[in-house]
Image: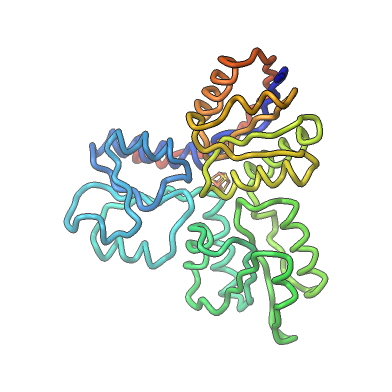
Length: 312
Ligand code: SF4
């Protein structure tokens, strides 16, 4: 019988997600609807559906936005390639970039590395919008090599006089990425590392919180989205650090609460793009069936990214 729910110390919306959603909401107030957003503003369907109800139209391509519109177009928190910005300018769109400042930092890094003639290894997941946006900062895409897993490092070859650097996606597993970095540094002792880890504070804090609870609970449940990198990493982190069972819950309405009966203590967290309301809803649903003690460890991360002044 379920007796306890422990919630993660660091969880839920990060500063980049808060800022991106606020940019969209303030644009709706300033310009009225519709506001166009290219790609899901953050990877979470509750956030997306909520914004749709308020008058946001989500598109995957700028070609879907009506030509000649005076309504704003917003780019998602994941960042976009330079060619997307050029296209928005060519189409004369009023556009705002809701890119997280921590992704923006990586864009600046990769632009500088290309100027300095480095061959750049990006540790990340092919097809993820952040990787596409970062790769799209390069003038010459052949300067980039994507490494997705440890075994990819063995396949790399560069001439001995080639300068090499690496960068990473912000939402990777801290632990798996360290293994890849160690292998890269062993293979290429002169490889240039970012000055400060590209994996962001929110990803790192959420994974550490799950790591801390993994051995003390019977199962870990992560509120998040199936297409969200940082959500999937939290499920993996729980397993990696000794939790026998972990699961990603995209929709708390479709969850089989009865199965919690087999556990005494569960850990609960929400990814950087998952609203706290979903976590609270989950707890309320559990309480309808069981009477667990809920121990809330939540701590404020005290990091805020301001929205651009012109939207205030
Ligand atoms: S997960 Fe990290 S990089 Fe992504 S929006 Fe949040 S703070 Fe920014």
